[in-house]
Amino acid sequence: RFQLGASNMLTSSGTGHRPGATMPLALRAEDLPSWVGRDADLDVPWTRVPGGIDLRIVRGRSFDVISVSASRASDLDEGSWRSLSHRVYERLRDACAGRRPIRIWNHVPAITASLRPGFDRYMAFNEGRHAVMSSWFGEALEGILPTATGVGHDEPMLAVHALVGDVPCRSIENPRQRPAVRYSRRYGPRPPCFARAGMLDVAGRRTLLVSGTASVRGEDTVHEDDFEGQVDETLANLRALVVACDGRGDTLEAFDSLRVYCTARIGDPELDHLRSVLPPCETEFVRADLCRPELMVEIEGVASWSLG
Image (tube, rainbow, N blue to C red):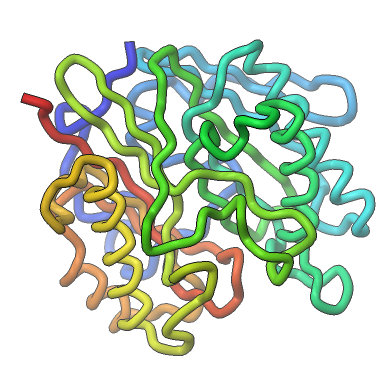
């Protein structure tokens, strides 16, 4: 039932741009990549559920989209924010009704805002997420984590969107990076819970869903204050995931779709550089805050190729 790949993709010059404008639009809490909207009608209304949380379930052709959100989340104190993150993930788990999500987008308000010295909102969010996922997946946690992106936006809402399908998805890690779920306490009391990529085989094609990927080697940010260095490192990580998935050559040509998250530090010269080095596929640019303040760009995507 799950069908992704080149046949689903449309080539464009960046659907995240205003006509006639250069800079990308800011991420909104409800925004999902264009390829998701082509499979599922995202205009389905939300339903309020207990606890001040909103829920939306969309039945698509290839997958279901389950979205959980909570408004007025941006100004909560540490304990309330951690509790809200926990409740949102509990609601997602319940809505999945025994099925496992294969791809998640976490849109976090004020993602790097400090809650106390050395501790930001993303770290508290990870505590809530980790607690639910640990009870959800148990001892098998690391081997079956979904692919995910976690980025910030300017709205007050916390929104978590998940793709749920019927086809098994195998978690893929990047040999150049430490698995996120094994991060040290330098990045918070509990680590982020996601796999670097997820692999599905359907109807003679292999599809690779790639998490938000940035200039991280091991668990460390590299090339701080060097935009082109960060781009090169990010692309190297994308290539490594394709190779890890299939042993293919070191190439970006397998990508059908990319979504590029750029911080407000990025201007026209940096965007021009990105366009010059990205592969020729559907690419949308979105302005967003990233989970580490020193990062300037993050890229997620979908790659596919024939198994024949």
